[in-house]
Image (cartoon, rainbow, N blue to C red; front, side):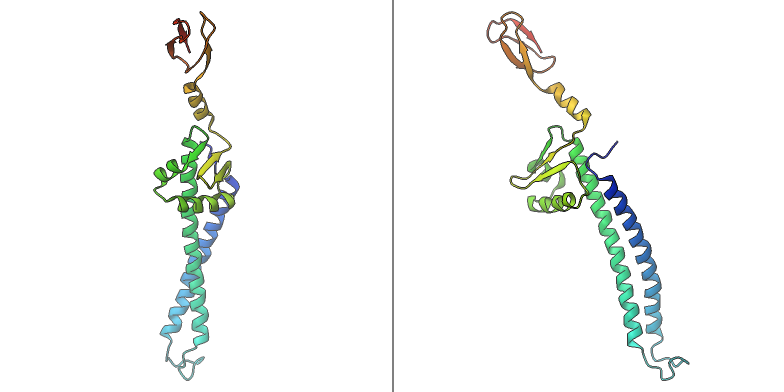
Length: 192
């Protein structure tokens, strides 16, 4: 199924960035973290490069900061995974909608989040270009879907009322497809 509300280009870019963050950050943690531990274990050891056994704080701090940078990259990659899952979650909510507007009540019931949190999250995802074909309305909270799932539209139209003329008197009533009623004007049968 096509994800109608997810930007394919943003999703592909996010995946690439996530992979890069994990590779560089993971490699950095292993390499720089290992160097940091090596520096700590070399403390007070006398070697040719350290004849007095002094601890080189500058080298230690450099490796330590680089290790923290690697940790930050991996943490950002994990944050990006969570964002991608939220995008997919909202996409599933939007695709299941059949009237073109997802209300605050629907969003709070399905997400379990408060209205301010939903607004913050959707605002970031829509303005960031991750969610497309939808418009966030803040007050009252609602998301208007600008593209609709054709199957959902057809299902909705099958249950929608449409005007039908009475074959006996010409009076007009609104009926659903397949619905049978008695004409309120002449009492004759009307088939929707």
